[in-house]
Length: 613
Image (tube, helix red, strand yellow):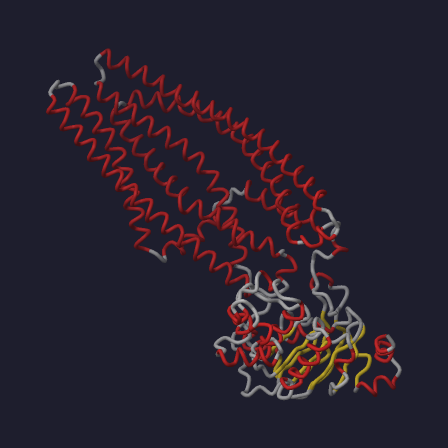
């Protein structure tokens, strides 16, 4: 077993993973509900400006659609004053055709606006997701010590969905209604300044109570989101650890916990629904009550002869357009706030500077790379436990082509050596070199291409066996993939799969046994043809026969490589050129197997424990 990867949510740091995860989800939900800083939305403009044709056409049809909507009120006025008033069918028909023509134009402009706005919005979100994902895979492991993987994925998916709602619909609605309100108000003043002044007094008196009551609705909505977050966190953890749940027969207990969490969310949702129903009643009563008052005053003006019937009809339609547009702006404002919060969280990722990155002028390694490695007085502590260094003044050198084994108790620093070699972290002091070059002077991507790594817990993808092996080296040919599979003793079991090398392996390769996954990981390392081979308990998951065969393949692969082997099973490192015995982050012994046994130190004690059983 290798040294565990450091995590900021280790058991000693948290009372329970479920409660911590739920707390994080609740925190995210509160951020989404309360963000009022709209500046992060400015990050969307560069993305939109990449598609000027769609942007211009969306704005053009937005303006034309709004103009067509307002033109309907003028057509309605002409129909009443110059159509019905004349008493001739010809005049009525003529103005009806005008109304129908404007309506058809409105339909066309609205459809085109929807198409170009939605297309542009989808493209913006697609570019945003691509940019965030590109940055997520560039960030060093240190970032994921402070940000949970689930939280990062939430920003990639949930937050992107909130922005998608804004740019594909809410922004269009907001712009359209803003133009509608401004255009309607201008026409209202032109049609009847007196009634418009009265309406401007009445409308605020109806709107202000709605905004005040809306705060209560928002609080209840946030409460519902928090309780649903609890239920989602419980469900996610339970499904992720399904085998453990079933092994301990906790299905019914977890079902009851989930039922309680959903019932709590439903109770909160009922309170929100009741409050929203009251708010809906207030909206209808206040807004349309105000419109009715203005209509009554307009009807009185018509009876007195100070206003025509067509003017009143136009005024009523414009009032409805203005009121509905203003009301819609209030609803859209919530989407804008949520999208602003989402944009801020996604921007945090985009502006995050990778801890490990290439220098301005990286050194180019001489070809071919020899594979000479050295640690010079290395001291390193993980960011989450700076007071407990994983390595203390560690120094050693490995010659090109040499096979060196790292052994020692768990937590002695063996896996940390591998992480520093691949430059997932930089040491606090000292220098790590490859062929005499400080790793910090190299491009990390170019550096890592010189290593092939087989971990104890083989990480596979849900793609095919062929894709998993070819992941080791881009451009690997079919013959090279099959040769690597054969060398790793994986070819036979892959060939027996339903579709052979093209068989999908399922999530994390769970359709395979542990030994099969390990052999695929070895094949992936072999196809890489790197000058340095890192084996982290590479044969630990294999049965005795498979271990013998794979060890033979590894022995062949190690001939032209510098090889570091982490092993707890000392039988696998007897043939190593040199064994480094680590304890508490530094080397306490080194030499060949027989020499170390003769020294009767830590290695000898570990050997007695293993070989006496």
